[in-house]
Image (cartoon, rainbow, N blue to C red; front, side, top):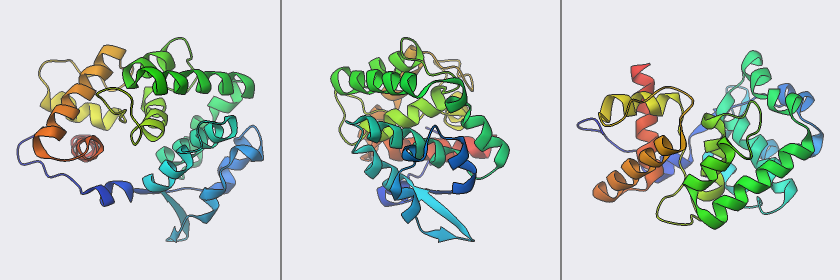
Length: 221
């Protein structure tokens, strides 16, 4: 980590809230049953509802069912996207380019691996055998994070890896050439190892380190 890095407390991490536009998402989903009711209960700020990590974690607790996995995917996409129409449309290509049945099967397979074998094996599954077209690592790592960070299997909790985190890693980790997309499974494993080691040293949870990396990477972008 960069020198003098400060880490947000866990409540701040869980409260990280992103505005969204329900009306832009609903027509792009396979059906209204893909929209979790919790998103309709989110508080508003500046005229927009805002969904935070805590809410998505709550939705993820139902990911042992097909409907719950659908809701988790939608919530993770909404939380990671914001309100711009073009960005929402780009994220929603997942639903245009994959059948609902394929998405269901691949989510079930990847999250099953997460529960049985842990984060790195699940990342490999999402990136290979159960790849969902247009759901890249920056977003399927969000699905893994919300599904597994609170109930992890193995030594490492799943964490979000996106371009901002990668930019911070590029500045802090000289042992790997960090690209801003397309991370391999070994890269993801190295990331988890680095973050968990640092979290243990400073006495915080791994997603507090991830949040600090994200903030640092945004400043570098």
